[in-house]
Amino acid sequence: MLTSGALSDIIDGCLREVTPLVRQGAGSKELLDLKGRDPHDTLLPGIPSARSDELFRVGGVIAVGKKGVDFEWEPFEIACYSPFNRFEGTHHIVHAVETERAGGVPTWLPTHLIGMAAPIKPRFFRYGLERFKSMLTFASLGYAPQVTTTILIDSVADTLAFKLTHEFKKSAEANPFEIIPAYRSLANVIKAATGYDIVADFTTKLAAT
Image (cartoon, rainbow, N blue to C red):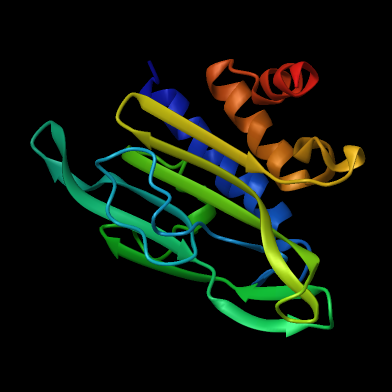
């Protein structure tokens, strides 16, 4: 059972702590060897369909005025995408960052503060990252970036779903939380909000393989 406060904490942590790490590699408007999720990677129903390379999507209602003793609420939605930008050298790929906002969110409120702003009632949140690694392929007769690690979280109402896929060839690359700062930060956000330790669970399962 996910409380509304926990959902706000997850949104706040992802937007204020994880996303800056995602952008750190190539600047504030670009992602280096990372992009948003594939639109078919949906974990929970109840969230609007994703466009290709969606980094995150959050929606709910926000107070836009007073109506008697209560607030007047209006739906809102914010989505961030990471369309392909360019290849950088032989081993890297760069994606841009584009944010779209709809509904009652005031223009003066920065997107990264949505999780901690009030009065806002989040209804759903989705966050997804795919990490690329340069791989030698016979098809291209050279190196090409391929997705090797994907981390997804979906949340609707009081339900939270999480999925991690990871491909590796060397034992030193077996634990993505040790080599990808953004993934480690995302796991820390989930642990702080819900108490569930993704890293410990993954490490235990990894040791059992």
